[in-house]
Image (tube, rainbow, N blue to C red; front, side, top):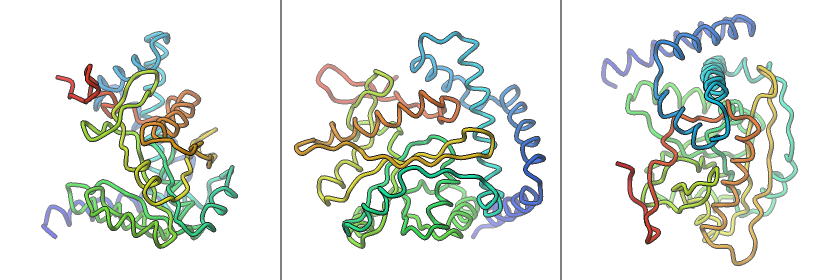
Length: 294
C-alpha cells in the first residue's frame, strides 16, 4: 500500500478509537457541532440536495426544505459516527425488527435472497444487524479510490461477519451468492445513466439500476425490500417488506415496485434520505432512451 494510503488508514483508525471512547451523549454533541459547521461553512453538494428536494417536494416552502436538509446533514454525520463506533454503537442501540420472518422464510427456499435497499436511513447499523445475527449477507459496494480508506471501511464492516462484492466485479460472483443460498444486498436508487430503466420516483422518471429485477427474473430468487431508520436519535427500526412481484412482471414493473416502497419511506422520513446524489441526472427523451442532463 502506498504511503499516503497507509496514512489515511491510520488516521481513520485513530479517529475510530476516539469516537468509540465517547459516550452516546458526547457523540451526539459532536455530531451536532459537525453538522452545523458543514451545513454553514462546507456545503458539500448543498445545491444538488436543495434542487432534489424542490423536485421531490414542490409544495414545501423554502424554509421547510432547508430544515429537512439541515437535519439530513445531522442524520448522516450521526450515522457516520455510529459507523466509526462499531461494534459498541450497534450493541447499545435499541432496534425494533419488523418482518424478520419474511427474511427467514425466503432463505429457507434455498434460492438465495435479493435484499433491496436505498441510500436511506442507517444502513451501517442495518449491515451490522445482518452480520451479528449471522445472516449470510454479501453487499455490493463501491470501491473507494483511496485504498487506505477502502481497506478501513471494508474491514470495519466485515468484522460483523458480512462480506462484500465490488460494484464492477463479475456478475458471476453475484449469481454465485444466490446459487449458494445466500443474501445479495443491492442499493438500487442511484442514477443508472443509459444502462438503467426509467421508473417514477416522486412522480418523475428516474433512471434506476435494473440489476435487481434481472437477477430475480433469471435466478428466481425471492426479493425483499429492507430499510433501517431512526425514530428517535440512536433508536432504530428495521423494516423488511415483500416486494409485490406478479407473474408476468417485467424489469420495469419490478423496479417500479421497490422504488415505490423506497419513496414511501423517504416521504415519511425525508431528512434520512441521501439527497446529495444527482438522482434525476439522466433525462428520458421522446423515444424512451436516456440522455444526460447538460
